[in-house]
Image (tube, rainbow, N blue to C red; front, top):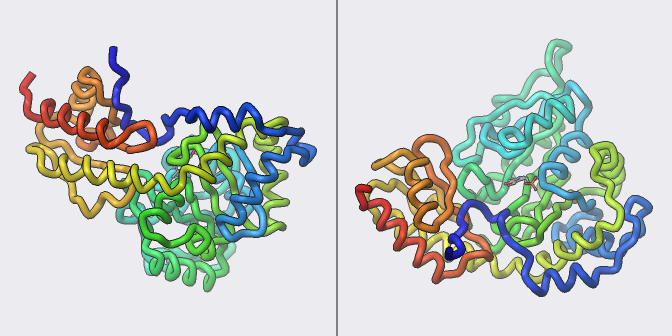
Length: 345
Ligand SMILES: Cc1ncc(COP(=O)(O)O)c(C=O)c1O
């Protein structure tokens, strides 16, 4: 059977032959002793890309986010974030279970909230209230459909947070995509935040790996929580090497993923029974509403026809482009989608 065209996520990427080669040849050491040269190099190059003094390698984006939350807060503190954010929605309750923090949710639009909404959520300093410590921003926003935070809006939110004495963390799992789409360097986005997490295992195509960046002092404290959360690895350079290869070689090509997502979105917008605003497709994630059948029915039909996508609730479907699909695959997926949207079987 033909390999399906997999549009479920950019996390399904397989390492390229060159990436596998780099991983096979990586010099390694015990990273808990600080002796893995490949991890050190990856941390240095990531910190440089983000314009931060230091960075810390971890196995997953969930761990980098949760270590960030734990490092910025103490149990009983409050974190303010968008209601659809990955940290709140998809990290298995870790803010409560691992960090002991309360989440205060803001009603963002496609994951993006305003400085006014943040200000309205601030609490008085009062013995009755939790102490608000941290504001989180997700850029690009996953459930928001790969939406990009306007840099001016980040600046306004950061200003409001600083004025209230709060710290700022950016979940930049797909910050690389935001930078390629806007031309605004990652370091400029990062300059508004005390800490930033980034992933190598999504659009950059590495099999494993994320990093948390911040000040030397912040990263030294984070290192302790990484150990506590079970993320201290030994000869992790094998996987860090895949991440380093992705960081060095796969950033610019994200533009191809964005072009493929746009082509798919344009075709979808013209199909009967599909609702999609093209202005909402900014990077590599396409979310559309299906009017003619339940989302899971379309997902099942497409699977049988060789295209994999995900249902997001009863009416919405998500398709994500990555280095596993090229323009020809997208053309084929469009033809299959057209057929499934119009066939009655
Ligand atoms: C925005 C965002 N943050 C964090 C993560 C978590 O990454 P991981 O799956 O490596 O834990 C994801 C994963 O999809 C994500 O989309």
